[in-house]
Length: 237
Image (cartoon, rainbow, N blue to C red; front, top):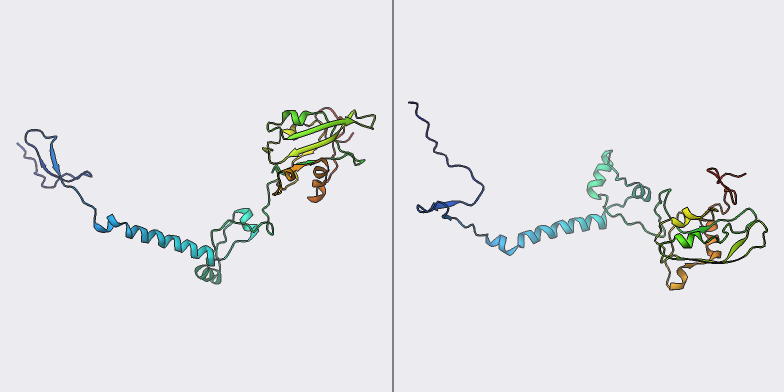
């Protein structure tokens, strides 16, 4: 008979070290209890390492070079290419701060950013809104208030005597723009609502909504045909 080679190596385990096993019940075992060292119990070493990392980031962000506004807007991080840039990155590395110094510096908003509301005008300077009440009806925040009045134009039945939007209640959903059949309200001003100190200053009146176009360099008139129908209703007739 062939004899099997005796293996003197103990089996490798990842559990606790077994010192002895009961002869009555193999499930009863004596294991070695590993006590933490005094250094681990005091947490001084871990605290020291954590403070070192914090101070390292603090010094880097305090004395390091700051990225430009264009790099922050594009999410770019400069990569040193020349020997001078590599040496400069060691002496004064680029910090990780993403803060923009507003209002001196402003972020570039995406093209489809829903900004501050603005009221559009016809060629004669009159507001395009015909007080159809579609926008306050569809508004989920009930932040739009319209009080209609009779229009002097024979081709338009009504116009808004009062048109107000509470920007603090607005949820910026854009439903008012989608519901408007006259292209009278837009949210393409590329700016956000301004901070106010008084609650009443957050309510945009009709005059303020009309002035938003001029303040942000937008065309106040619309190319849509008033009362147009069909898929090409935004084109002039």
